[in-house]
View 1 (spheres, rainbow, N blue to C red):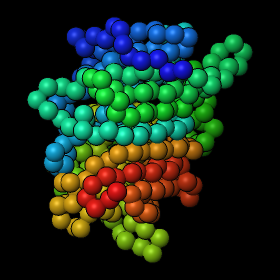
View 2 (cartoon, rainbow, N blue to C red):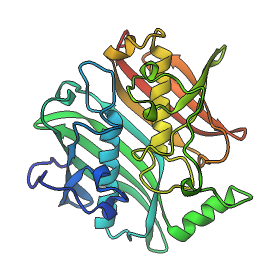
View 3 (cartoon, rainbow, N blue to C red):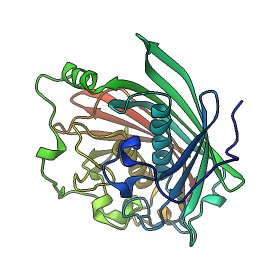
Length: 318
């Protein structure tokens, strides 16, 4: 049975950035984590009010960004894994995730930072040679006494050497790194207001086309966006693809002015990742709308690499 988050819950300072695999302290939101049972933890996170990425939205009233909730849960997953004796020199590769926000009222951004607590349970851990290889983590989300939703994350745990071997298995040449690539502004980048954004650096889509199959775009994130690329990567991270899916779902729901997006919220996200998204090949995303859901399929080099479903609320959606 899932435990509650009652007990120790400190929001005074963030945890060591190394324990959640972040380079910048400003990108750490987890503030506390404590054991509550066998493979179970309570966790606390303080969510920022003025973050350049997570608080950049045109929505009114503005809700806590679901991707910020997902990132806080991801950090709790990583920290908890290390508490369960997974070595720090381990990569946690996201296989799939889901975010279901069932109570948006407590998630309206106010004058004080939102204090999120999580009842976290690790389950279905597969081992090989005495080492954990996969993990399934469930986070029950609370703000104050209100239950606001659930996040589930499935990850593959590999050593750094195994990560490199996985990367080389899919490529004929060494993977490129963001450290060696320039930050490029695509000349066909979408206007920020059409994807619910204010600042152009947070736009990750370009060249939209409406086809018989749906809305097709190129995925063109800015490498200078340190929320999406906190450290050097040899691939496009899962969070960046999730942001692309969110923006494409919003773009497809809008009337071409951005007005609809001001009253539209994201109530759910669910993604599955099949292959690494490479930095040196074009990525396309195709959205098919079946309101309130939008299914976004990502393709690269003729292969489907990921699929993410976005559930919208408001703005004409149920």
